[in-house]
Image (cartoon, rainbow, N blue to C red; front, top):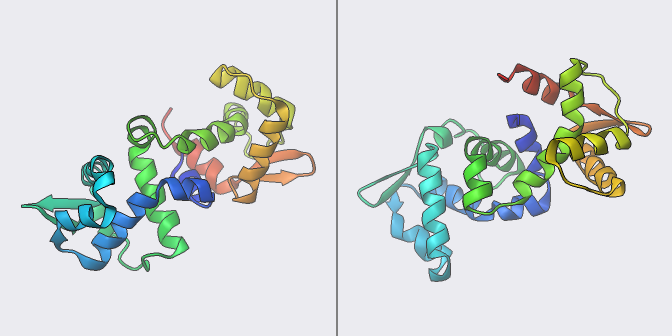
Length: 197
């Protein structure tokens, strides 16, 4: 999936809520680094210790933070966004979108952030046809997107649910609508088309 899709998915409150702990860690590091690693554990509380360890490891593995001698500092993928004010919507969209882009499988499979797989699946129900046909302006109806979803993910989903999810994606700009049809967002289509197969 394209970075631009992940950035837009952050606009869904449930997705942003699932990434709240990561956002909290990044914000703390950005505003207070260098700081002892224990500070993050204290902020997150003892009941979240295992989850906090996993998030720290993920952020270190993806170069958003570095941990040296039990001291936390920002790393290259966080430092590159120094101009963004922490806590802003732009920070969330760009930085959390990049975290998701770099660690999607880990977030979904190991940390059980299931909404991250939920919305891209519905986006694929449209973009699959547009990319296969090489038509960035392809207009697709709900029935066709529904058929794609069932073919790609081998699961049965009611057409009404597919329509609701596509409408949600259109509200945040992952798709565009024209009457009863869905069209691609040109930026997202371009990013997806440019990705290696």
